[in-house]
Amino acid sequence: MARPEPVSQSDAGACGTPGCGHERVVQSLHGQAPPDDTGTKQAEVASVHSILVIAYRLLDRHVSYLDLGGDYFAHRLSEQAHIRRLVAQLERLGDQITIEPMEAPAA
Image: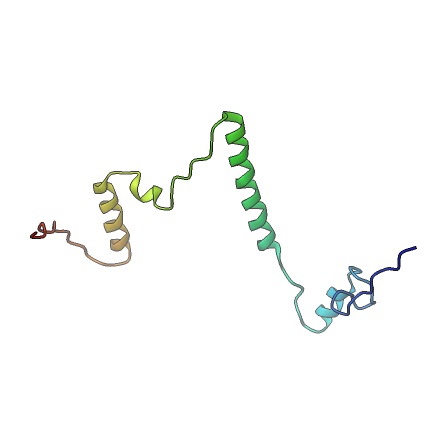
């Protein structure tokens, strides 16, 4: 018969049994809030969901994955649309913008 692994003091709750739940009671009595990892778990679930959706669509459509690149959304529209979007962003920050075309550099 195999011997159970010893429980370290950090893994054990107030009663000495891992996962017994008493550690949250002890923390609340000492004014310490229990760790809230809800946001972390939600982010993990969202990431896994995104990957599963991508995998499903690739398998369903029988296509290979094509990475569009980090600047895909910046260059998918025309240059003028990109300029208008950047000017609008700066104006929302409270700046007044005047755009003048640059002269061609002399060779």
